[in-house]
Image (cartoon, rainbow, N blue to C red; front, top):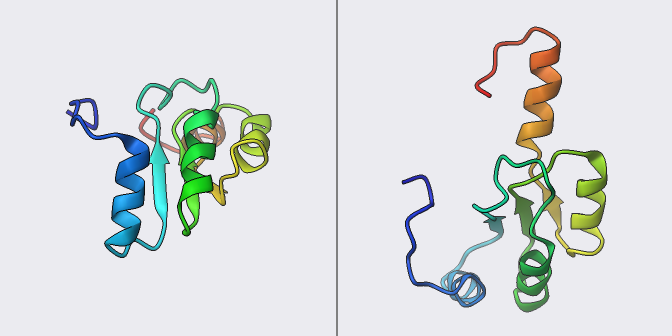
Length: 99
């Protein structure tokens, strides 16, 4: 499954709900972008960041340092998750990582 089973929930509404329930931050992963290295889902990231009172961490899609910049500026994310970039860096240096 890994997050690919539709829940019928609206991501923006769900983010607002979990904040009301006490979430201290939102790790927002676009499953359509995850692992693609094409960049984060900026529209959704910005919409959530504008509507919740907690930090939003952009996740899913980073493949280039510029993607981090636009997520933090245009997407208004408070932080970014950069697993693919780090994995590629470590792999290129001989560290065993799951790609």
